[in-house]
Length: 218
Image (cartoon, rainbow, N blue to C red):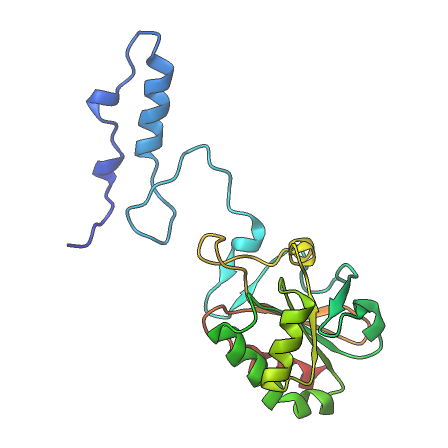
C-alpha cells in the first residue's frame, strides 16, 4: 500500500512531548525532527527542520533538463588546463573565437557514457559545420581516455579531470544523492560565454540534439 503523508503524522507523539527535566531540550529536538513535513520527491521521507535549503544548483527543471550551477548561463566560466588523451595540456582559452561544447560525463566505458560519446562522434560533422569544438571531461586518467577514444574512434578531445577539480569549480551536480558524477553539457559561444546548460543523466544521447539546436541558433 502506498504511504501518503497527512497532517495527522505531523502531530508530536505524547511519548516525545517535552518534559520539565534535563532531557527536555533533546526531547523537543527529537519531536521537531519527526514532525517536520518532507519536501522530498520520495513520499514519506522526512528531513530535519534545521536542514539548510537545497543548493541552487540542485533546483532543476525536470521537464527541460536545464539546471542552475556555479557556472550559469550568461557568464564566462573559469578557465582550466587539463591533459588530453595524448597527455598534452589543453586550456579552455585555446578555443576562444569559436563555439565550444564542453560535456562532463561520469566515466569511460560505462554504457551511458559510451552511447553519448558515440552519438557525439556520429554527429561530429554537424558540429564541425557549426564551427564548434567538442570537449569531453571525466575523472579518468589520460591512458583511459586514449583507450576509450581509440576503441570507439572518437574524433574529439577528451580531458582528464583527476580529482574532479574542474567539475567542482563549475558546480556540476551529482546524481543519486551525489553518489554518481553528473552528466552535464555546456554550450559556449565565440566569446566564451555560456549560452546553454543541459543536464540529463539517464538519456545521454539527448545531449547531442539539444546542443546542436543551440549551436545552429548562435
